[in-house]
Length: 121
Image 1 (cartoon, rainbow, N blue to C red):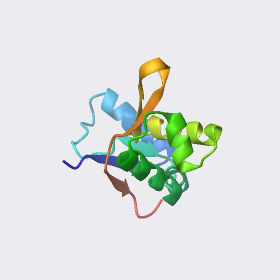
Image 2 (cartoon, rainbow, N blue to C red):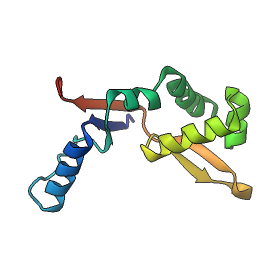
Image 3 (cartoon, rainbow, N blue to C red):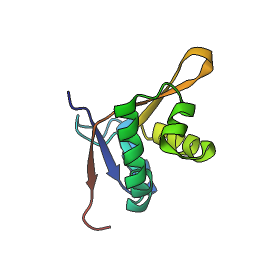
């Protein structure tokens, strides 16, 4: 089953205005509306760079039992890998499940990403 994360790119002001309209009941989000927002294409491409997408694929295919195991598989430094995974977690791309002995086990939560943005600013 395909699970898609709907992502939007909008300015901080636009996101804040949208959130306030939802809170006031003036806007009802649709099922396919973005669940995650980025403030720029640059921030989106940083999180979903080719290197980071390869990391997501590695997690899906190899199913590492811990971040330490993923560190060995990927060849990334622990601090860099931890920071990347925490960022991906913040955007809903990965979950870090607590395993035996307090080990964190990474899981990819979506297999597709749909991007919505204005064609102009």
